[in-house]
Image (cartoon, rainbow over all chains, first blue to last red; front, top):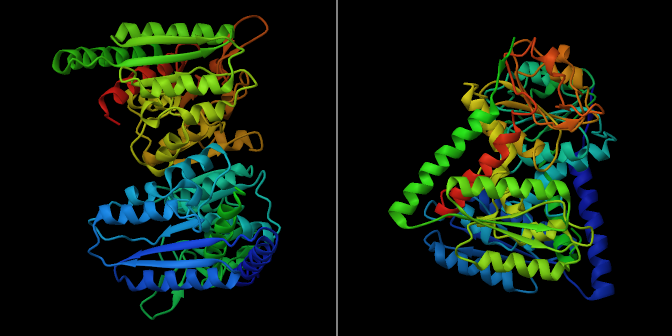
Length: 281
Length: 281
């Protein structure tokens, strides 16, 4: 049976590390990192996410603000609000909770956040810095996966890493981060022969949002399996993108869903905000 | 025997297309695209490259300027010169020929070029736009490879593409462009098991600068092989990164060296300058 990768415990450790550093920053420099979260409209999931982020921020000792706007806010007004946060010296990180209402160009809003405050790592400059191997703020979920690998002693160097999914927020940055750590990286998607590709993965990261797409017997014996998916089945049960039971018979280590990658995203957001506050990227 | 991919002829066609569009722009809008090339010091290879770029620019009907500075120019002065070109309305494309002298931070210079004028596609915003699948100026060499594939009727969708080399100017953007065209993409480097990876490539792109590193019998029968390498052997002969003779026994199509990818780089630079002038990216 595979080792369970306890994302909840590792995320708690990351947050505790951030908390220690925040206390030191306060004591040494009187500096309190600040995270501003922008939320538009009444999407219930967004409300839950934002509440979780604000709570985590307060627990590590940050200042945090939620800026909530009505769904009818104009694009110009939202841009003006983002610019105001760009200029606010107490605000070190700005997070615009997605999705935004349809009349607002989300790409434009994200590109308007100052790259130094782009704690989501979604700005084109952040994506470019990652691709070019330059310092910069990295997207939280793939950064969290890298930390999980580190924690289970899995060094990607020389290994075959297979990333299933090519989104801008997980798949592509994930592939670039694994490449930077000297893995041989394959990026797969709906046109790929998944059983063939998955069978060659020493490290498998799946982020597609299709319940149990990856069958257990596709997995290479001994692989480290990271499941970014989080899907609710008809019976209400939460499952990942990997058929967990069968996969855990073959993998050497695997993330559960929930309690694997999920908790890491908020933890890495805390870390990014700390880095943004200290200019430590 | 593999079909030879005639990069020289295809590049000439791209330049002819640009020339037609330039003539139309002049006639319709009185607009003449302008390319400014910045060269620092006396690197002999740089001098040859810049001369070639200027000549190509004039042939397609662009305005072009070479700004040559002494190797002793300060970083601040070079930055000021780049900013001047950023502000010059007749200049639509700015190319800073690399390498720059050691006392100058090349990354800083490249990041100072206005992204809209970044015809080399090396600015972090250009790299980010590519990674995110947004419109933007793309690096010339991988863009040229995509055009070669198109010209030989090779559609990457659903194919396995293997990129050997992970540089910022070829390997990484190449992988992202092939991914965008729905290939399953593997990126390899010195830690990779090359024979194993190469054997799985329907499309193989090699850009490492090691003479004849890729052996012919590694290649999958029927593969399309694109050799970005250009190396001079002890006997003075130019060879690519692929052992051409043996590879052409197995590939369905292959680029020669010279005369394959090389001519495409300048042709795509012309195309980028045209795009920059018309805002057509």
